[in-house]
Length: 254
Image 1 (cartoon, rainbow, N blue to C red):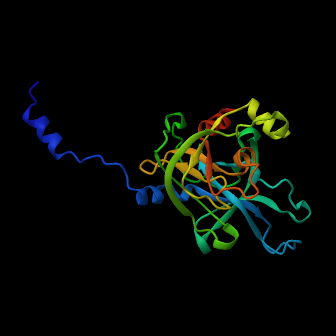
Image 2 (tube, rainbow, N blue to C red):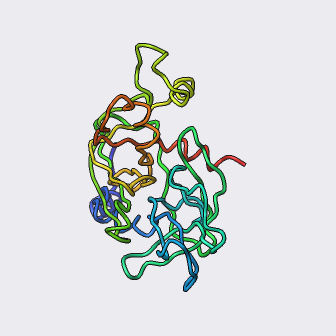
Image 3 (cartoon, rainbow, N blue to C red):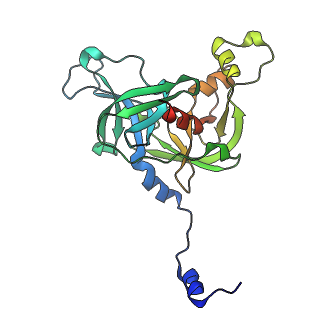
């Protein structure tokens, strides 16, 4: 097939489309990464002595007012007598801001929670297809490890999907299983095992493709480790992520 001169010239002069670099992607997704915690009204006396408390990480999706995090990050009780509220924290360092949020629904089986921001919309991240994730694939995740110490400065880790593995460990004897493990064996699903280390505060961080920023998973240690590593006195430093398809299912529920 012959290509005309004009068409050939357009092909030669058209800018090449290259995958974005990770620093560019981080700049793009950083405004979507939020801290999850609690906050008291300004100058409100409280028993804790702290105006805010960081508990984990979340990320904005959907309409810009929806936030995904781990269900275990959400506090079971609030100090309602002193107007403590669930909050999301956004921005950077001393320029960080807080907005109140409410829990819309949770998926305890996959340890996910959907929150709604009570305020302005924020840039949202795009969900990718977690069913296409392969072992050896590059990933990155961004969050607030040890947020109470390091503050509101998002930290990015990079690694690969080391394995796609059932979330419950194999057992030799059913009598060694507790009730939670029995339930998870009945509702078995695969999780992503990562070779990058997640720290306290990273729970709820988005795991994304480093060249597109599309979310393929959510960092989680609590649910998976208490199933797979319950026989260990000291849990390993292995990190796990819940596939993003369960985030999509949570968003689609009505």
